[in-house]
Length: 243
Image (cartoon, rainbow, N blue to C red; front, side, top):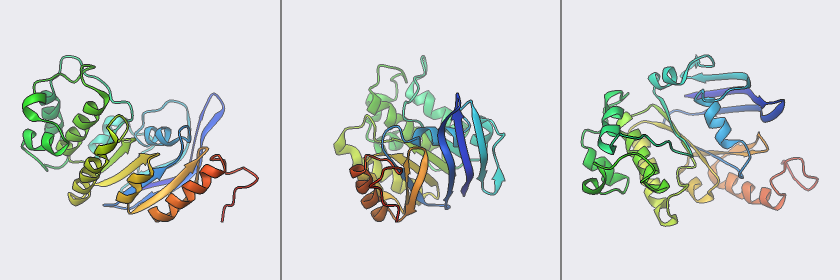
């Protein structure tokens, strides 16, 4: 579904991502885990074409080279992203926001806005007429964004720290959305530093200091992540074992 070859990204001659090689299989929940500052969100932004700077390497989506495509062109291919910091939209109600997602949908998964809001843990009577602005909490905005994604029906979605701002007891709610996305046939790239979310993935990779350290099954990556904590997340540390 998604293939990344020798992807590097620099800003002001500082290397943020270094020779990333990664393949995300179709209809798979693939997790990328790593500490804060590892380059996870930058990687998601590069995949979606949201960055400016020196990008090297290739990104393929369904065997199509997308390096030169604008974000709207990538969206037309069926790609979307729920960013870590969700934007506000002054003057647009949640109902109107979901209608826009429906208008440009790739797949017609849902028609009922009330049902979808309930799926993401929001009361439709309370939220449909509210505005998508800073009157909503960060957790509420994340839930609205998840509802929007379900209406868009993407082939491929990046969830960047999707549990950020959502209370800890709602991790299971995030898991339910992941299950729905996979059940509908979507491919999910989940960016996280929360080890609990690896339980919902089929495959995972560990990103440290802008480099992919290890790719494998989520359990082994979780164990390796714990090991990296001892080594202060540095692959170059003298006590880091790369076996």
